[in-house]
Length: 256
Image (cartoon, rainbow, N blue to C red; front, top):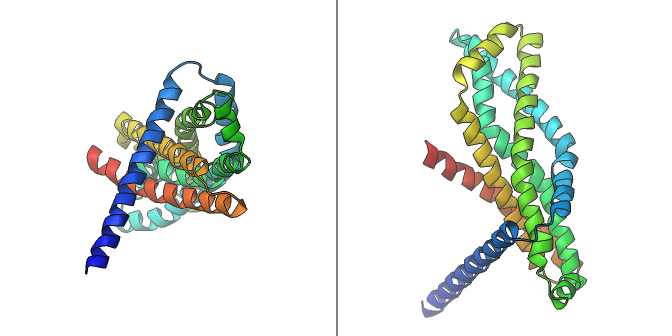
């Protein structure tokens, strides 16, 4: 009994220490992001890497997501004589939920893992230690640009995801299933309001900050060797994906 309580206490202390370390890491990164000097060139490079280079996987995922939504939603709506509401069904599902979440998951697997691996390799090659020996803050050069870039790129990618998915659903609903095209977009404009769009953008920004936080932290604190970088990358992707889903629930419950 005593051994069990001791083990539980050790785990709780380790958990609180981890929470404290990650919180301090995020706080210092935020301070570096809003204080001078701000590395604009580095931020632009990361926006290009996170945003533009993620476009192929975002477009492909969005297209088939919209098509599947149309295939699943249209027969159900037709049973109750509401097939004209396919547009609102697809758009509301995408803008406030599926768009931010799926785009964040795709970016986590593509860009988040790469950033974790890159920072982890710099850690095991002592490059981060070299930056510190030069009297510079590595968070300002490695973490702050990624944090700002994720906050900018994720809402843009979510918007692209939503637009492409809506048109993918249009192709299936109108061109394949025979729905009236004017009703698809007409009913959409009657149901989608600015509040839904704001929620989607807020979620995507939150997920972007979460991805940058977890992936950069795991890269900074990875163990030495190739195995350490591999483990840190895997942990970053898994933790980010799980936290995105948990965060989506919390944000939705607070807003609604």
